[in-house]
Image (cartoon, rainbow, N blue to C red; front, side, top):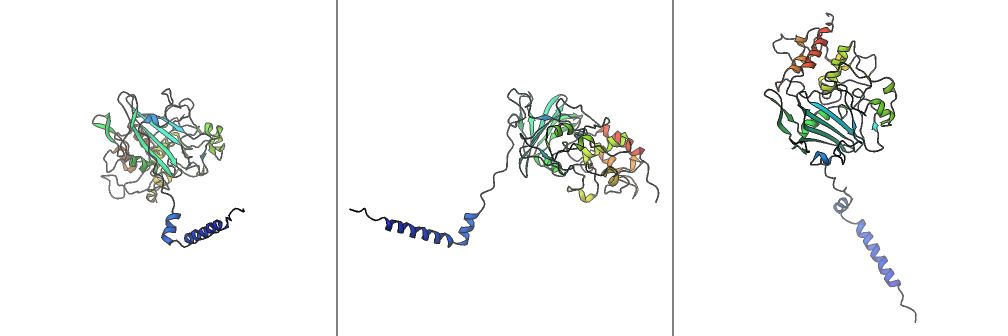
Length: 365
């Protein structure tokens, strides 16, 4: 006997397939939109709870050798803190330096900065590129016994250590960190062409010796960490364009301590005050700080001066220079920088005073 035919079952399946297709093509627009919608966005990356979990340290408790130490030639002033810094670039990755003044770091990059007051570790800050457009900012507070450091609250920790009689250092909040880092052409500050130049300024205030194995422009080029490769940055190291050594140190200090906010592309660009060095600028052009600050009226008026007498930098006259007045101030309404410092940087004030006093006053118009 012949087996029963299977064609009716196959026909039934074919009819069912046609019906399903018809239903799929005729589903309501709202259903189609829901099925085609993008999957939910991934949750933002979060910093680990303990510093020991961030990758800074190896199994033996020392700094992981994959983390390169570095020391910017113009350190940021933070109430006299001693600092150590490290960067980790993902294995086989490179930094995009197509724009020499706005380096772009690969996903996975981490940087740490440790702060010590009176020899004791107080805080370590970390920034981490967790995604193509996602940066995580975190600060860790060290235990008194130095065993580990714990993630600080998002709004920071006030008054953690005395830095001068009656003045205490506060650990910044996440928004404080983001305010400075996101105001610059590059999110990472202190790791750029000028700061890593092999032509280091011997008069830079608070200059630090290079730690063993430190990342510099020459070491980054040699290890193929810059893309495109920039041997020209080694042959002709970036340098402040200045008329004398005092001016070089003064403008370098302003670039590092003020240029993160006062630059040509950040939220304060509308003010017209550009203190950030431009490594890609013409060697014959004046430094941006000279072009935009010297003999510029600015918006801030030095208290007690007659109308029209104040200048951002009054060549030959420190007393009329608003920039210097604000560096000396620690009133919240007038101090500069506005964040991260409670103590006046006297060494820098003295340097800037000498530079301003030695500049020739502009010719009468």
